[in-house]
Amino acid sequence: MPHFYRFLLPAMWLAWAVYWWALSRSVKPAARREPVVSRFLHIVPLALGVLLLLRPGIPLPFLGERLMPPALWQFWTGAALTLAGLLFTVWARVHIGRNWSGIVTVKEGHELITSGPYRFVRHPIYTGLLLAFAGSALARGDWSAVLAFALVFLALWRKLKLEERWMREHFGDMYQAYTQRAAALIPFVF
Image (spheres, rainbow, N blue to C red):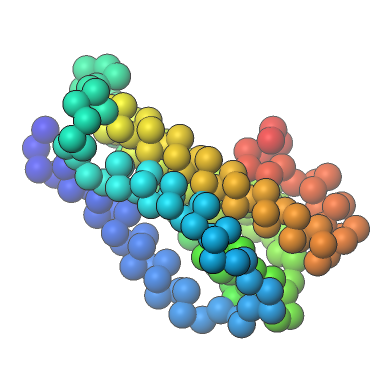
């Protein structure tokens, strides 16, 4: 493939990461914070997933095997899904504002956000990330990308379960009512 194709997805992910880092500087202080050991249980698989997706040529030969022959439709569909997922996370990040955290926390003055993408799913950042990883995996088309997606899904699922428990504890019936209106990850489904 021409160089353009090799650099498009990494450029999208890099632009997203720079934006994410810039916004992470202005968040509310945490009133309750996830313990370090618990953090590692989702950070390590997430990091492995990112490494598998971004680093071609993993030394295990079967991971580099393609699922199907490379095709432009596959690349461009994957790139479009990646972009859509990343933009969805940005929309969610704008709506959650200063309540956002990269780790599981309850913020001082924590607010329950139910507007924007939070109307449709309770964890739209995870929804967007999963869509972006699925798109990148499709564009790559090899087993390492599939494994990367699976690791990211498991990491985010574990984190989601902990966040759900903490939100129920913090917001009580208000959060329970919210769970009846909005799906966890897939709008109107799950």
